[in-house]
Image (tube, rainbow over all chains, first blue to last red; front, side, top):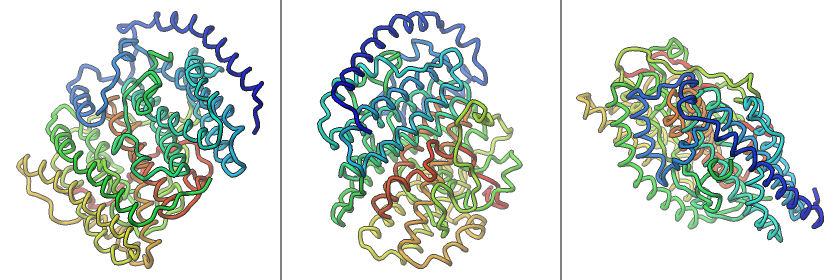
Length: 242
Length: 292
């Protein structure tokens, strides 16, 4: 798969447009979501029980060593919105792999294509349950954030390093999303996707010659922290990219 | 894209580093275990799913079969957060499956397939029983690693097995700390039912180092699958996230084993090009697995 500089610039320009366009609507959409209504609509949710108190305590003590962003909670995202967000992130990954493909060798390209196809399938899965939050476009803010790095990629190692970081952030995003998703069905889907992203990152790390330790960037636990995309050890915060 | 070969010194260095991380995590695990077993509001099913052991109130406990339990053996030993591989199945399961497991390779590809069984309180406080069962599986893992060590001829790999066995011992110690803290008697025997049903036949067939590595791989993948199942089954979001921050790491272990230890390709990490980790419950029943 090849991409010319002109195509790349065109993609970046499109991304910019998408970014600006989506910003108009997403803010409106999220503004409509109120915590009370959200809670009232939840199914299979045992919020308020002592059980969840224990679970949160467990999570905070054990699995969220880097701290979990509360911004997403504050936004009161419902499951369909989260699914739509995840779909947009996955589609952004598809776009990123496509953009970076031009510098990959013939041996590496098939692997990238496999990963790209995974992300497309993930996007489809999320989209199937996102309801009216489903999207057909990559997350514009994320694409905008990734574009400078994408533009700077000169060789295969650079492309793999870029993908290595992105895959990790995807995995961490899902770990954080699982703290938000209320419906077990949505959680089940996410739980089958997170390990794949983690394995993507591991494979890419090994291909880059990283040490065994380095393919476990957050140690014995996947990070469930969220960030603005600049931290490779934090997921992609819906409050930033939504 | 080719896999990266590590020399023995590098592998040892990495293993020491991982061991250090594991040790630092152990106090937190003890804390977590205490919370799990000390929380009267958490259902037995939730605890079982978290631990990766059969829920005592469920019928399928009694039809647990095959190597499914080995996913449990890693988890079951109470969510071994670490990257430990556990005992040996003795089986050389096909990629993406664990021997004896018939789990589908996709967990969710469409909305229609996103089905889970929300946990409900099965009733009865069987916390101690679950803890003992988990401990017995950890003991089993320790014992089997000890036996399998005889098959390991590469010093770096033997070091890894010793390291992983040590992890399981730490898990056992942590569980026993919880058990004795709750007034129970520490578990000192392996889970005989699981050993007889699964381990012994496989172990008898294992002849080479490669057999041992495949056993480790099967265990890691079973563990990851168990976590993926639990991640969709536990009824509290925080627990689901907790489980999957571990499950993702287990999946990484499997990838490392395939590419670094077994010199497999990236495509082997994703059998049948799978885009979804298996999310079906690998924990089917086996008579006598529950230690009361």
